[in-house]
Length: 112
Length: 114
Image (cartoon, rainbow over all chains, first blue to last red; front, side, top):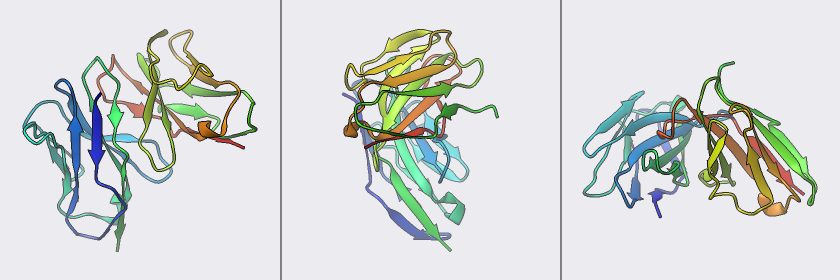
């Protein structure tokens, strides 16, 4: 079945550091890919998405590019802030056919 | 507010008790999902409704788990004869149309079974 593997956390960075959170996927079809974020005390919320190969999703300074050849969707941000501290989940969906499948999450802590 | 609302936020049950968890989706959202999130893990799919129809219940872990959405709005997840392994956060999410992957999540109901 479909699955998502993301790098283990926790990840601790200093403010303004560069962030990469790796995500790779396994899917039988041609999925859409997502990053969701869970801030402390809040529900998961969609951060960005990409629906086809070479698409780049972006939001709030975060970016991820759908790489079909490496089955990856790594999350990047050039300069993290303390307010980015959260748990980040990579997910996929074979549109309309299957529900979202999530990775285990990566906890990011940014220190001033 | 206009978001997905779940209640109760916290529930402690003795092993063997029945529990009911409620989800109020965003008004007008057609699709509704239940997920189970164990500590330190990602959400695991339980079941999916489109309006009042339960289209997928493949993720329900046992026949002790039951979900309904009788009028296509509010949904209830019921767990009968709770076991310790049922301890988790139960997440409800809704989306405007059919399953597109763009979900709006509630804050979850944390169930602890003693």
